[in-house]
Length: 518
Image 1 (spheres, rainbow, N blue to C red):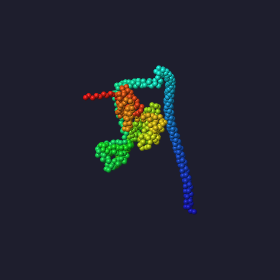
Image 2: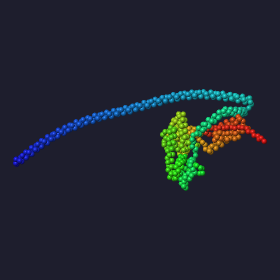
Image 3: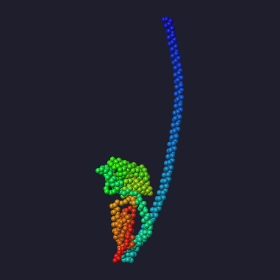
Image 4: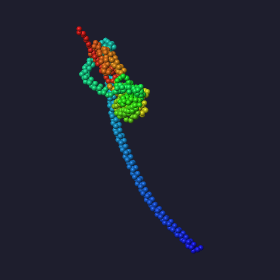
């Protein structure tokens, strides 16, 4: 081995040893740096953890504080509600106490009245027994003095009494009529003013026809159209009949459904005003008018509900109620009649201690069946009850619609209240006008009843049946008997007839003498 190789070997050994020590030194330095980093990281982590812990504690404390405040607010609200309920209970207790006191007072009054009534009844019975004994004694005395049998004495006494009473009644009636004649002019003026005000309300005549004014007779040809296509399309679309005759200036629309007839009338008015009359235009105007009428009907139902103060009515029921605006009964508008019945029912119910709101609701909806009675089978009470039941109305409301014409047993007090209000609204003077047949029949009844009295020669019903003129025989009657006949005829009318308002009876008795000068 040469010296150069030894040197290389020595250098390699020295380099290896140096590398080993350098590596060991670097490893130690790296370990020191790592340990320093680890300590710094640990210190930072501990500091972050402490910060997080402090933030968490702070958040927990804030949340606990917020929960505490919310709990205090809930507790305060609960305390307020409890206080309100306590005050309401106190008021209720005071009201019940007052009612109990009033009831106790009324009970005492009733007991006192019963005792007084019993005493009076006992006194009346005693007086009746004494009067019977006295009459028996007088009857025996009269029989022994007159020598007549009880039957003959009774008959003679009654005949004498009847003659005296007839004379006295005639005298009294004539005296009262004379006194009444002094103020008859003022009374008649008041009656006329009242009648004018009563009949001033608008009434829709009950009819199946509506008239439409046209500017000229040339328009009739345009309405008919070429070969009648316009009028056929109009009748097919609207479902009504159009009557075009020689009557100048008008066209008649006929149909039993009042809503459909009104849609047809307005459609025809719009077509005449527009001037364009052909099948497609007819359908377009009819559709627009139908939508307007539908909205108008719904609005009428809502207005009626608001006017009476009946909230929460189903929209379908409100629509049916609005249809009653186009329905009339004996010339009385059914919607206005229902509103009037609602107000009357509410007042009657409140007067007798029932719920006025329920009564008003029942009164407003009692004739709802008339909006569909031409489409369904059965009378309007049953149809109305079915409609209200399907739309979740209460049983007493349904029963009021079903039984307001006394067709069933009244199970609810509101049914009787509505029936009473319905009768009041229908029978008040001026509310309804009679049909021609019923009017003629009532005229004949008035005259026939009057002619059935002795001494009456002729009778004439005038003033649409509000007055009856009777001509009495001057030979068979005098002034006293004529006054009695007048009174008896009026009494017969009250007992035998049913009529709105009043009937004035006038008996005329006169003597006529005729001579001819030649």
